[in-house]
Figure 1 (tube, one colour):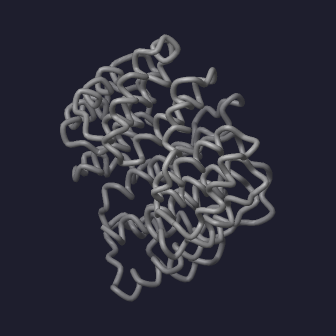
Figure 2 (cartoon, helix red, strand yellow; figure 1 turned 120 degrees about the vertical axis):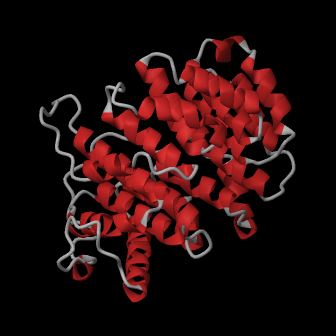
Length: 342
């Protein structure tokens, strides 16, 4: 998931607490348990229902994470949630709503998309233009190209590049390659990474190789590049990912990102690591990073979702049933649905 936000406020109550508890039984922490077909169906039904509820959360990061999950595991049945999100008071949620509508090409929402291109927030305008372009409306690709080439904010240029890649339109390659050589983008690692991400999404192998090169850089750049490689799931990046999975990598978060990427290309090298990190507790909590334990556990859930081994379902089910942090509940339910749909 691409959403990233600060710590959540105190929650008024867990979305999922008790909703999956009936399925936990005596299976806690027992990955040897195999769920029966009726149990798998019930688990998937409950997990999807709870993602739908999370998509209506008034906590924007929870809502966005749920929307991004639903795009991948229940795109058509989640159309009402996507449409509703475009009317949210939160720009982050509006962005996620338009991006989701574009992913599913919901042509019935074209009026909302064309209206969204006039949103007060430039990031939302980009997502609305992406959605309209995905639905075949002429002229809206220019909004994204303009965002990529003429916007002072590097984060907006990065968003524009990402959305151009998601268009799945080969003609975007020319604009993306030209943007790589603009002085503003040459000075911005974030913009450069996202342009190469977009090019790799559009099948440009040299861009994937460039991302592998960035994965050998400084810590911050390395993490960003590995997140992109994990999302891409290209078999030709396997060796670069395996290198970062090893014990020589200092940060468990990085190793879990890599485990997810390897899972996406059919490898389970990070399975044991991810299972172990589902219950991670930070031994030395950093007051400047209060979300670290949540982040590690969420990354572990996402890795298990991509690895796709049904033996992880009891652990994820227990996590979804007993957690009180909505972000972790969403991560666990998304992973459950990914595994059940493998």
